[in-house]
Length: 169
Image (tube, rainbow, N blue to C red; front, side, top):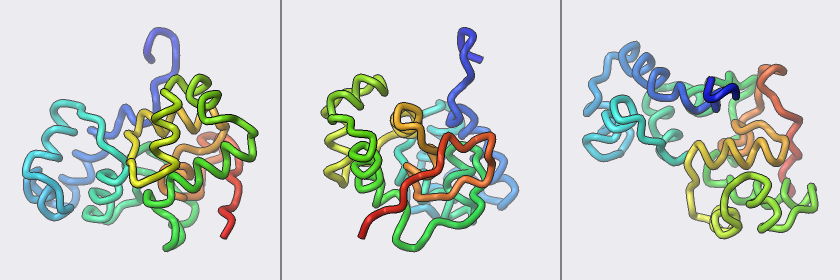
């Protein structure tokens, strides 16, 4: 707990990453390279607590063979994301649910505690937000952070904030 508030879901990412990496038998550098990242990417997350962007989490999850929603937020997905989903569609999901809630970019930014410019940058892609930003936006929009970040259906009703809206084609 942080000052009487529940810790954000992404706080345990370094531990989940370390446990999954060890279980898969990878070194830090080996996993970083396997995921197509810089040599020290995994070390920075595990040791320094650096908060990665959602695309980095997705690359690490793919290299480890785990769901990105679990690695990022500890949320087990009931179903794997659709091939058209994933972090590359975060802007479209954000724009859709923001519109459905009738929030302006600025209003959502204020509600989530991020700048309107950050919201706009995410919606207009290819800006990849951090896990912390995704979690703030998801809470403000009353959607699952796993859905917003990766298009994952959340399998735990206790973790699910609400049912996400289907993406329009």
